[in-house]
Length: 293
Image (cartoon, rainbow, N blue to C red; front, top):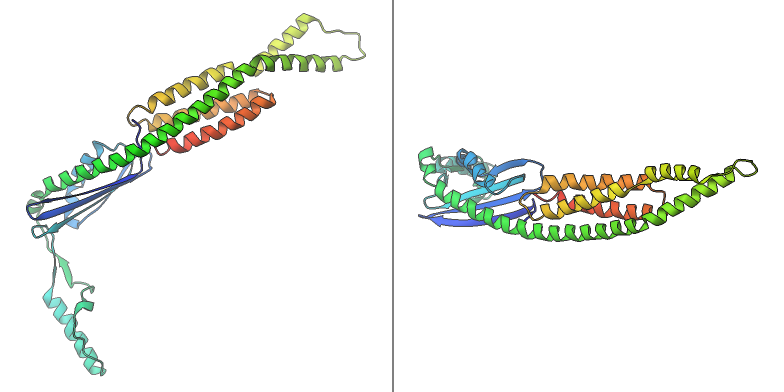
C-alpha cells in the first residue's frame, strides 16, 4: 500500500544500564536525504544508521536523533572542577573589589565554556552499544511506518475518490460526442450558407461531408478519453503497490496533459467547462502524490 513521505516515530530501549532514545522524522523529498543529530562519538555509526533506514524508507528527507543515557552510557558529561574553581575564584575577587555580595552558589557558572565537558570514548567502547542503537532505531522506524501507512491510506482513498469523479465526467463527455458532432455539422452548414448567400454556388452533400470529416478529425477527442481512462486504471493499480510516488507523479502530469488537449480541441461549452473541472480535480491529485513515497 502507498505510504506518506511525512511522519514521525520514536522509541526507547534499555540494556545493561544504558538507555537509548531514537527519533526519526521524514518529510517530502524527491530523493533519500539523511540528516543525523547525535553525540560526536556516534558519528561513526552513520553508515550503519543509513543502511537500517534504507531497508524501509526509499525517499524523503530523513532526520534522525539518537541519544544514550545511563550509568554505562558512553561520552558521559562531567564537571571540570579545576575550570569551575577558576571561574568561581575570579567571580569572588570581582565581587569583593566592587563591594558586591559574594555569590553563595556556582550554579550560574555551569553554562560557561569548559565547565561541563563530555568524556571521550574510544571506538571499542562505542561498538559495544551498537546493538542497542540498532534495536531502538528499528523500533522507531516501525512506529514511523505505522504513521506513514495510516496517512498513505487516507491519501489513497482521496485519490481513488477523485479518480471516480474523473471517470464520471469522462463518461458524460463520451455521451455528448454525438451531440457535439451534430452541433458542428449545423454550425458549419449555417456558416457556409451565410458565406454563399446571394451567390449562384450551392452546397452539395459530398462537399459538406468532406468538410465535416475535416472538422471531426480536428475536434476528435476519443483518443484522449481512452488515454485518460487508461491512466486512471494505472493510478488505482499503483496505489496498491509499494513506493509508487514517482510513477503516480508522472501519471498525474499525463492526466493533466490529456485534459489540456481535450480543452484545446473542443469548442463545446459544456465540454470546456467539464475540462476546467477535470483540471481542478487532477491538480488535487498532483498535490497529494507529491507526498507519497
